[in-house]
Amino acid sequence: MKGTYLGEFEEVVLLAVAIRSGDAYGAVVTTEIEGQMGRSVNLGAVHSALHRLEEKGLVSSRMGGATSERGGRRKRLYSVTVAGRTALQEVRQLRNQMWEAIPKTAWT
Image 1 (cartoon, rainbow, N blue to C red):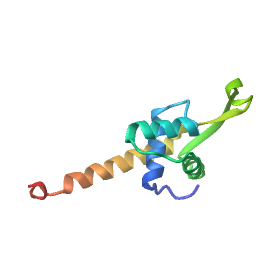
Image 2: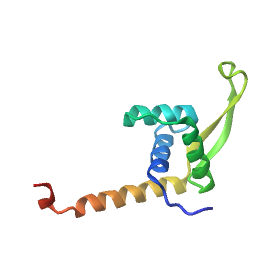
Image 3: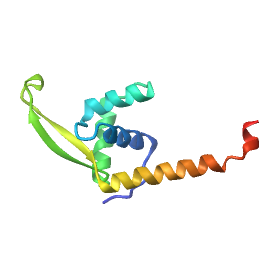
Image 4: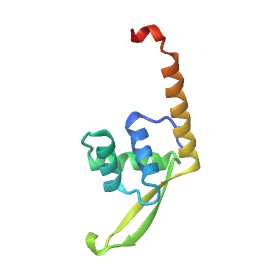
């Protein structure tokens, strides 16, 4: 497994996979990010991030069933692994710690 450093975009993709728990695939992850963040996301970039996250062991994938709407092709469905949940918790803890470290006077 590669290192578990998460870039900002990888973190956002991992969060979207967690939100969609069980039915996360490239297009749905893209839609989730766009809806949550109000920013346009490239599907190819999402697929690349999903691949990197899988190499790092933070997500796992399986092939879903074929659908007629996709011309009989199957979707690759992603789920967050235990390591992925741990990485998200660590990132959240670090961000909260840093927010708490901002002096109150910095906001006045």
